[in-house]
Amino acid sequence: MRKRAGLSAFVLLVAALLIGVPFVWGSDLLGAGADAAAPAAPAPAVESPAASEAPTRKAAPAAPAAPALPPALVHPAQVTVDATGFWSWTVIDRRTGVAAGSDNAGTAQRTASMIKAWLASDYLRRNPSPSRSNLAELSEMIRNSDNDAASYFWGLDGKTASIARLIQTCGLTDSKAYIDWASTLVSARDAARMGACIGDGRAAGPKWTEWLLNEMRNVAADQKFGITPALPATEQAGTAVKNGWIARSDGKWHVNCLAIGGDWVLSVLTVYPAAKGQGYGEDICSSVTKQLQA
Image (cartoon, rainbow, N blue to C red; front, side, top):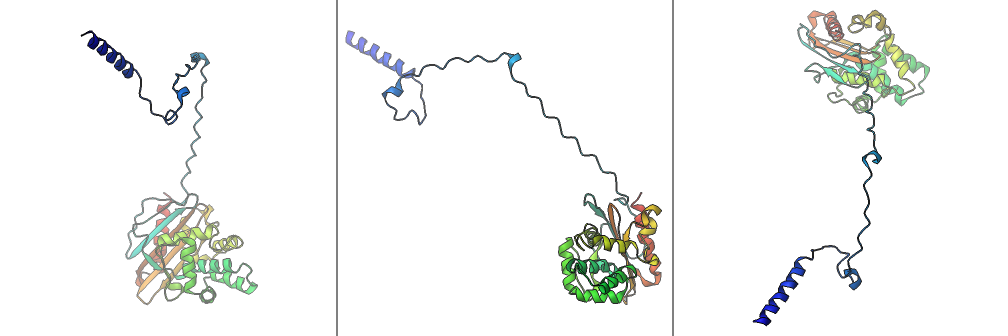
C-alpha cells in the first residue's frame, strides 16, 4: 500500500510538470542542442514614454480642390428644333474633351464640303513643305470651297486611304469612305471629333495647324452661315468654320456646319427635302448654336 501511494505521488508530480511546459512551434527550436533548452534571460523592461513625450504626427494638409471650369461659350444644353427631316449635333469642350450631343449623334450622313478641312489637313501633315501652287490651291479649297481643288487633293491624299487615316488619326467610330470625297459618311459626333483633331494639331501637324485654322476663320462671307451668325459678335472673327452643303439627286438637301472656337467645337448635320432650300438647314444650325449658349 505504501509503495503504491509513493508511486502515485511520483506520477502526479511528473504530470504536473509536463502540463506546466508550453507547446512552442518554431524552426529555431527544432533540433537545438542542450544549451538551447536553457531558459533565456528575461529581456530588460522598457518603460513606455510618458504621454507628453510620445512623438506626435500632424496630418498632411489636404490638396486644394481644382477650381471648377466655367462652361465653355458653347456647351451642353437641352436642344429642341421643330424641323422636317433629320438633324443631329455634338459639342466638345476642348479643355476637357467632354462631349455631348443629340440622341442620334452617331448616325452618319454625307459630309459634302465639310470634309475639305480634313483633305487639307491630311495633305499638309504628310507634305510639310508644299509648293506655292499647292498651298494656294489649299487656300482656295478652304476659303472659297473650290470643288476642283478638293478633287485634286482627294487624289493626292490617296482617296479612300485619306478617310482611313482620318478615322485612325482622330479616333472616329461611325464614319467611312464612300464613292467620292463629298459622299464621305461622318456622324455629328465624328465631325466634332474631326474638328477637335484639327484644332489640337493632330490633323495637320504642328507646322500647319495655325495656318489652316486661319484659313478657316477667313472663309468667304457667304460660307459663314449657320453657327457663326449665332455667336456673339466678338467671337465670330476668331471662330474657324468649314460648312458643307449640297442638294443631291435623292431630292434632299444635306447642310452641315462645323466650327472650332477657343474652348469648344460644334458640329450640326441636317438632311431634309430639297424643296425647303439651303436656308432651312442653315437656320437649324443657328438654332442649335443659340440654344447651346443658354
